[in-house]
Image 1 (spheres, helix red, strand yellow):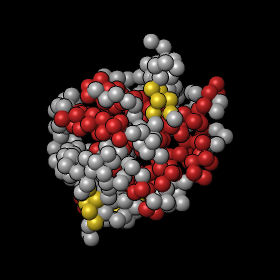
Image 2: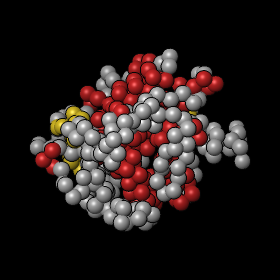
Image 3: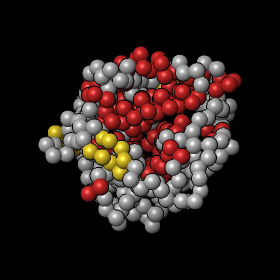
Image 4: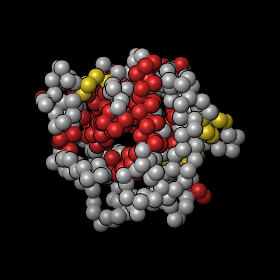
Length: 339
């Protein structure tokens, strides 16, 4: 059926939905964690459950879908597929919520996303004297082999201790690690590595950064180049570094269930920006075909050029849509809006 006012899914802030919906969402995520992975074991031996399928796909595409023209369209369809899995496979009744970070940017843990209750995503990780940063994480898979990201010092570093995911076992990753922690036999974190979920909250990534003022400035960007770069380098980057640890690994960040709320907010900003001039912005794209236009190790001789809307994106498990078919929230099978 075509997308219309009667069947459109409305995505709301986690802080605005009721406890019943929050509990149902968490139950559905835990249900996916209990279902066996569909990813071929020969490709990702560490993929145990359906959550890992999404993490494998994200790891596999990381160097193509960040700091590139594919950031927004790729993640839009990726979130849609996750939302459909929650609904179709686990009976979730509502739609994907988002983390409304500016509302609590001065005190992020006051948000119901992070308050540590059973209807939250849990709070910070245990403080680890020797493992709370700062550290330089190395990104594998690019021709520029020394590409590092600075991860700031946080106030945790260890396992989360409260909320419904404190006993969640994650298995894939980490990938972007310090030089002395690189395992040459597991560079992309696809081997089994069962462990707890870790966080390393960094208030400095939120306070004065993830504010209404900055949000307003980003969605008021005059063109796609300004919008995409400011959204990615200011909002996207700091949202991830606030969470830290598993949620801040560019490859296996999906291990933290809060990833999907963080990216629903990123997608919401895009929808708001597009909606101000849909005719000219629906198919607007900015960026290269790889991370900062750096050639991939797998294709070292291919010089990445600008992304185009006719490019085909690989979403794993057989799904390969063209970019243009993933850019509208209300076409090509997708049907959602934000409140």
